[in-house]
Length: 249
Image 1: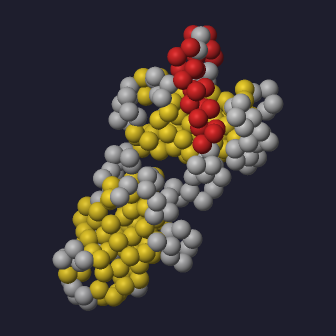
Image 2: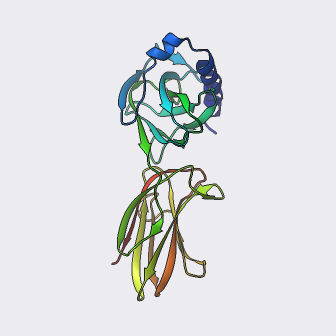
């Protein structure tokens, strides 16, 4: 909610840009393509959000419906903010602080095919300086059968199923004999959360923050049996890449 005024402004600005920008300005707007990293600078010569005075740069990208994109703006000079607008000027997604940083990142499945606008701005009028902006195409992945020990990587996306708004992946594994097991879920994109269920579907263990910041960890003694592991997030709507490890001490 802290960026509500900026977002409302940007929505109006984005709609105006998407519907009324002269063709020559579209041509001169930098084009983002998958795998590219572009350098930019916010300075006092850039346009402003009239609500808070933050400066902004605009980029364009061509999108295909259903594509899972990661858009990121990083800076050592200021707190970045991103807003993505669709072909008709509608706000698709926005982000201020991604993970445990002040960098901004949007991970979203595109709702339609067409031309999109990405607005890079600061948190306030004093946020000026150099930054980099990038675009990557992600492959939704995660879930399935594991053989312990295991180490897998996945990507939670807006297309994944959700429980009370929190997207999740489900993994299963079998313990042949009673044993101790350590399960680690780490992500630079979201506050991770783990649930461990037994064959009856009862939660036998869960964890939000383990010993290493916002990463989750389970250190449990398990009897023989089949288990289901739910990889999810602490807050609804969070998405991004993660690493899941199951190790035997």
